[in-house]
Length: 83
Image (cartoon, rainbow, N blue to C red; front, side):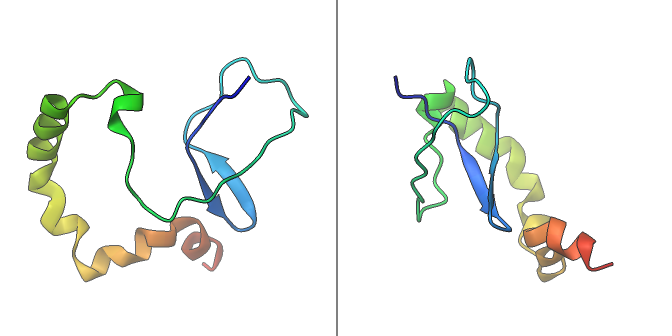
């Protein structure tokens, strides 16, 4: 059986974006690193129209997200640990 779950590699560990369903502790895993930040929206039941609506709704935040001041949140956990 193959179950896929999105995660982020940080500080030598993989943090899951969501908990995998029906997986027991101590289950063996294989980790594949993906070089792209693209997310397969279809695997999350988001179609092209829904994605366009989401993008339009979130566009008002883009200027703030892209500002240099927000880069501190790029690795929030590490920044928080240093203070």
